[in-house]
Image 1 (cartoon, one colour):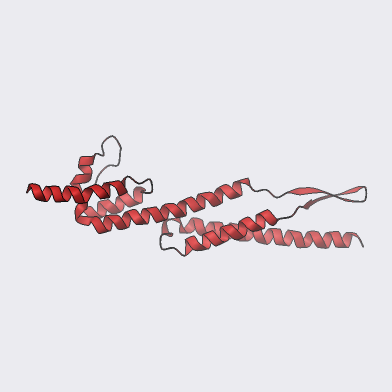
Image 2: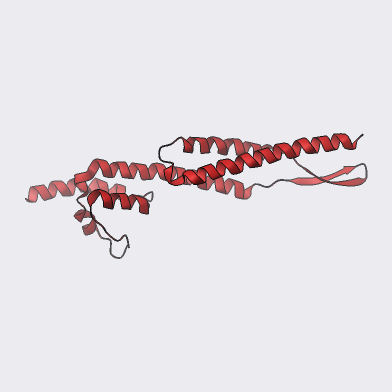
Length: 172
């Protein structure tokens, strides 16, 4: 009996290391509860090591490893989306005054190289995320960003075409 408890303990310890990962979200703990058939409150005041041992995680080593791996892959997608958000919160369209001789004629869009580069890089990242089997919790957000970036790219392209034509026609 003691040997069996010791074996269960030693197979559970490596899993505990994985379960303390910051990548685990509520949805992953829900999967663990379904897997083990045990329900528990994740409140840090009541959730103890004893409760983890009660789950008999050693009986589900492969499945627990799979859930923890899934959590890590999902965290990578979550971090990638956060990086994209941060990129776009700092980018601006730069306008500068345009004059014909001494006469101010309004403002024109400065080069969009930085924006175009960000769109290309972010679209590539979003396509990679979208191709991952771990994207499901973030699928709507990935599609939203793809749509936003596509719209921004189209608007910049059209703006520059109209701007060039306007500058050309103004000289006539």
